[in-house]
Length: 536
Image (cartoon, rainbow, N blue to C red; front, side, top):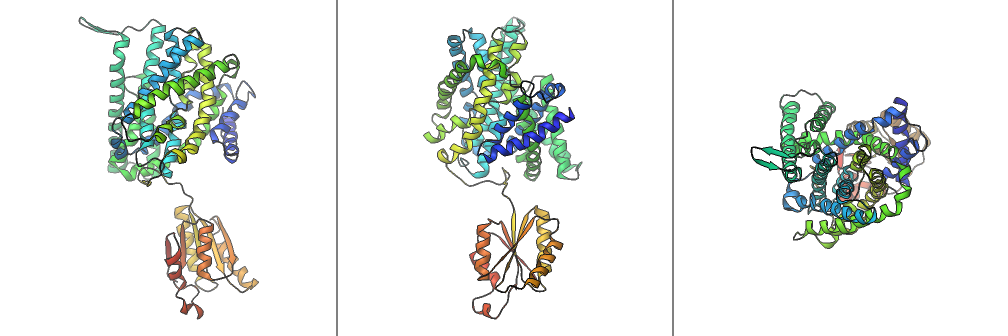
């Protein structure tokens, strides 16, 4: 299994990077390499690894939902009114019903079997939607109206509802759907369903609220941890406990509880939420690879061929008609423009994790049409997951308005690059030492700039030697140019998109420069990034 895990991480990472360089979503490469590594093509992964796919999937989905919760914005959600709530029920419900009706025509299913397929197909993939929406928030697309927040919340609620209906239908096919009886009062399982949905959602939110308070108490007030890594570790353990507890005692939605925990942590302790957000961002780097590679490895390719065209037609009708009606009803009366409503097509249609988790259950339980259900579930992953991952960043700039980014709700992942102009005098060492100190704390790259009109090879070798000594453990490069010093500093800062400039207060105090002002003053007046002045 260890060898298989090495294959998954190593090949999954490079397949994702190749896809990225080809301007494709990384998950496309990960799914494809998973198919190659899986038992149906290369048969490289061990049986134990494939059997553990569901457990790995649970961990990965937990990580991505905690990221979603830590990125939600209560103010934006409150402005949306009931849009997020309606997105949680109407699109998935409409798609499930339309899929059920169309499958009666195309596949000769009865309505119950068709609805079982509809529940599988109608579920939305947090593994695709959550990273996509958080990416849009970090870039500012749709943030003024809270469009990403509404989609994130609606996606979580819709999966809770459909999984409950799916469980009810499985009980119906197994003839174990007894309902609830108290005294002379009786409710059938179908009549009980709305109460189950309300209870699972309510208790899930309540469990998230309680868990957030526990985490704040343990990690901040009682200080049981010493650093952010330990904070993230404890949070992961407690979040996994929520998910496992919900599976054993299905009175609440474990995944919704995890997402609610992240949401309430922002309100209770924003600094803690920010540190946890960084930790879960790092966890997702590994979890994403494992999730999508194993997803590809477990897709049943052999059952796809007989249902390819029918499956594409079914998925198209379900999305365009079923979800289209749901999206219209969800945003009816809201302040969303027609372009923002149209964005729901790429932004709210991706399917992957839920379909991979439950698509094979009907076949395993011997339900008639189970193989067809599994084939269409696999097809929905192969079609909608790459399209969703590609469509979200592609159409957001065309359909959404760009607003101001809130750094308290999302991590800004801009690469930190420091620019350090240096002289060829005794102040060189002091400036480099300060630059190295800042670079190590912020994990930044360094560009060292030396502007000179004299080609003195001995001085340049001394500068290079000093730079290598001080910046030995930091990614850096030396640029040597000629020209007006102030202009060169500003030009290099723009060309290399540096995030900060670090320079000495009295660098290059030559006689000629007294007539035009100091270099530091000139850079302060013309540069568009923060400047740190170091005492020489």
